Length: 137
Image 1 (cartoon, one colour):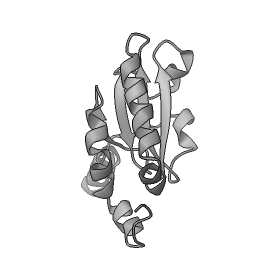
Image 2 (cartoon, helix red, strand yellow):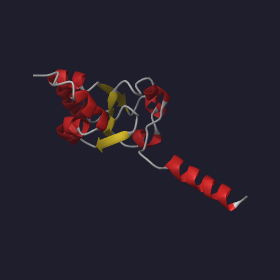
Image 3 (spheres, helix red, strand yellow):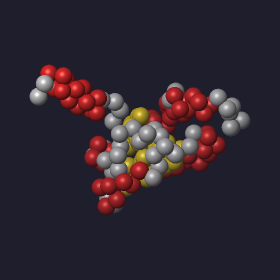
């Protein structure tokens, strides 16, 4: 292998492994590039987080819709949770995924909700969406 070929191979390997952590999963693929996702992973013992998240989504419906957010809930005791990426199924809590399915934020509790809109509004694609003006009064 020539030195130039070797350098090209190294560059390709490094480039392919850099960037954000993505949450590739067949179960999440249908939402890629159309929705941002809040993934709620809970165990049976913690119904309070589920209640808190559902209440938040109901009380902020316009803001949620404006940001193309979908809430997906996966109880840890259900087989479907095994279809999630390993990094997600190994940790209960809230996960925020961007349009590109990359993990943008995580919290074990409801703290993600406190910064959810601020985090999303700082994303480049969201900046473009906001240029059309606010959808919620």
